[in-house]
Length: 140
Image (cartoon, rainbow, N blue to C red; front, side, top):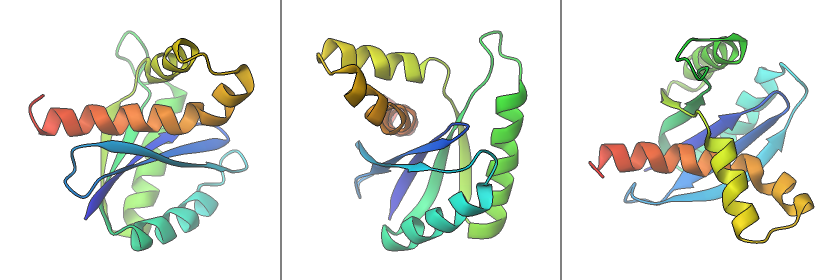
């Protein structure tokens, strides 16, 4: 069994997948969707959950820098509830503040082109979210 890491944007969902030991996160894919079309996302995620034998989802939680909950965080909570109800799987919220900035800086340091960065930013952010959770669970 594995864990799935998710970075929910307004029109993209970055996805990361743990190894079977739940130690290392690996980038998986990005799903593009119409804004607010969470039913489409859930239908896509159901397939991944089954195919990859997922037993837990770690969803990035976009708190404001002052630790308050804004509109994006409220949308994330709604998506979490829908996902739990539809897939009957535990969904953990993981603080994702600055993960996109960290992902972008990582790709800039790797001398990746702007076009490539745009293609990979969501999955890399999901990867950081999942790896942060895995490290926390392992006490690292």
